[in-house]
Amino acid sequence: MKKYESLLVSLRKVIRAIDLYSKKLSKETGLTSPQLIVLQHISNSDGVMVKDIATNINLSSATVTSILDRLEARGFLIRERSVVDKRKVELHLTDEGAAAIKESPTLLQQHFITRFEAMEEWEQSQMLATMERMAMMMDASDIDAAPMLQVGGIQTTE
Amino acid sequence: MKKYESLLVSLRKVIRAIDLYSKKLSKETGLTSPQLIVLQHISNSDGVMVKDIATNINLSSATVTSILDRLEARGFLIRERSVVDKRKVELHLTDEGAAAIKESPTLLQQHFITRFEAMEEWEQSQMLATMERMAMMMDASDIDAAPMLQVGGIQTTE
DNA sequence: TTGAATTAATTAGTGTACGAATGATATTAT
DNA sequence: ATAATATCATTCGTACACTAATTAATTCAA
Image (cartoon, rainbow over all chains, first blue to last red):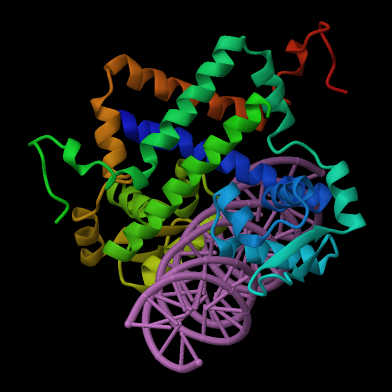
């Protein structure tokens, strides 16, 4: 097995662990990880709009809309059409929403956090740096940004 | 922001990149990453059963079943009830399925692989080791397995 | 000022991904 | 032998997550 294939295997395990935890959260507290993240963002900046959240947490607007639907249906937030720009929707927490956040658990398994914080400082930094590097390496958005750096010399975009 | 929170942010970016690539694959080749992984597993061991695949690729049986549904509907594989144990279902590729695999692209973005393989050998190993460690740290299955190792000395399970 | 282009949010449709419940079989214990 | 238990695959219901298409509103240009 190639090394990057092994990497994918570990990655899939991590992804699954995060997903399973989100579902466990949902069963215990009634909120999934994405829901909690969205609520926290609204809590930090009241009146924020859908697009901002989507950009901030790296999801599409459509996904955020569906998450908002569920949260609104359960009375955790209200949508308010902006008066200055009626296309926009401002998001506000209700008291229930604010209360839900207060009791909100961590977004990663506590046992992971415990283990992580038990690591040496430099190990933590190194793990974080590795993840950030990987995220950067997977980001396709910079592919077209610098085509002239390709082997073979200067090239035009067309 | 706490370090493990930054870690989660990077992790979510990576997860999203993988997901987006899977969808791009689907549009270009008609197969998503999970579908391709399942097909490859059947190809490697003809007659394998659903549970084996689920265990191997770290997914639930329910998820694998739904992936198989789509692949079977498109004629890439056939299900065959085992004669020795009628609970089991043996999976076989059709010619179409085998052909689909032949043209199968890589499971990670080519530009990631290119970048990854451009790294020094020790950097690759280090990245892989970090991911494997993280996967291990998130695995909850060992929580109950060794409670006697906790700080505070020997403890009973009850 | 009217028409074109852009932007914001939503809807529709597809594909994961899960746990719980179900139905059919096998295995084990009495 | 039969009753209890376990295993395997599936179905059901829920929640993400995406793109493409839609609706509504705003901005820009001729």
